[in-house]
Length: 311
Image (tube, rainbow, N blue to C red; front, side):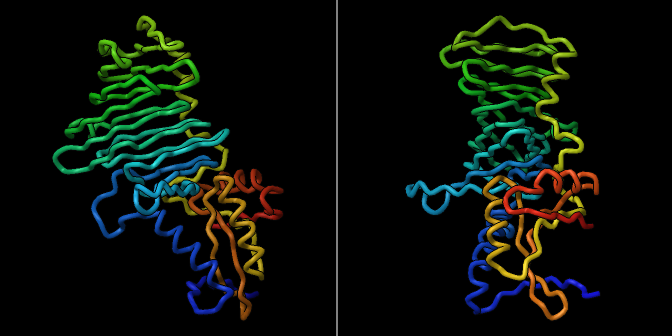
């Protein structure tokens, strides 16, 4: 049986130029600043489809590139994260806090300034449900973090909170800790009791109330990565080979369709014996079951006909 050998095939041949360009751009967007300072935020898990919109070139040019999110991707100030239907996204900030985004969501990383003395961040939830959780180690670090939910802003003080932005309605629920929350031109409201929630309906702030455990459980599920839905996570060892093609063009066609749909595929040239082949795959699945779930999800779509689960 022929063994498949993977290669970084960078040569001057015309048949490789498109692949080399795509691979270079994907690598640059996956890990910006590899040789620089600590990343401000890193993607830990993604239940696809999900994308990041990132400005390219000079700020004045207005050019924006939209690419699928993958585990390990480093994020920076100005990035805008987007999730599709049935999607979830989990991001860890440099000071240890975790941000989760539910389906059909939009999260703008307005400001991210990691440093040893003070971590500063300003996040904007334009649409969808989110959760911000600070672990025990992060609570001892100095930071200034604010989250804007549409027009409502919450200042964070060592906290676990959940919120959602929907047309005509914004919710911020305090699970633990302390926050100051309010809309423009209104006095900030201090919430420091677990299960308190702030609500704004059609631009009118409602009285602060308390949510019961059942409702909180339902809300929290909107931002949690779901088991058995083919989510990728940092450190996952399983992968799904979407197509193995002898022609680069066939592989590129599937690669482009899958990535445009919000799935973080990569295209790898390899050798099977003396024959050059091209493999389009998605990596970082944490188990065989999750890899199979993703394969089943993509089969029959985007040119994917017979996906294979491999470790």
